[in-house]
Length: 106
Image 1 (tube, rainbow, N blue to C red):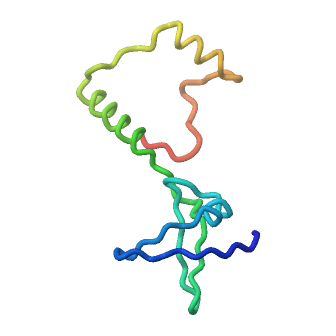
Image 2: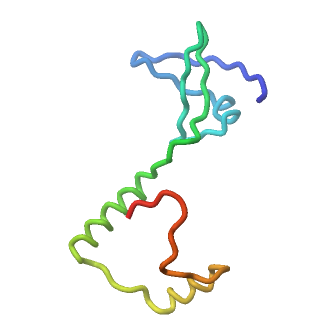
Image 3: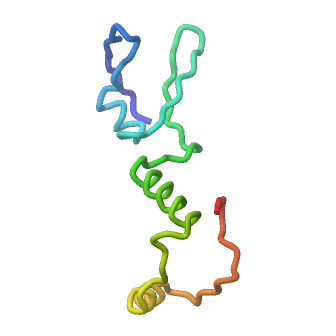
C-alpha cells in the first residue's frame, strides 16, 4: 500500500473525517467500515471487509415486504412475461428445490 500522510482535526465531539486520500487508499466510501487498532502510541486504521454492508433503503423495503407477507397483503405471483424474462436472463437451468449458497435468512 502506498505511503500516505494526512492530518485530520478532532471535533468537539471527538470525531474526525478520514481525508479523501486515506479513504481512496483504503478503498472505502460512504457507509464503509474502518477499524482502529492502537499499537503503542500509533493508531492503525484499516478497512473492515468481513462485515456486511446494510443498505438502509433495502433494509426498509425488506421489512415492509416481510410485514406484507406475514399479513398476506399485497402479494401476488409475478406476471408471466416478467418470470419468463428473468428465467431467460439466467445462464443455467433453475431448480426451485436447490439450496441457496451462502448465508440466507428466510
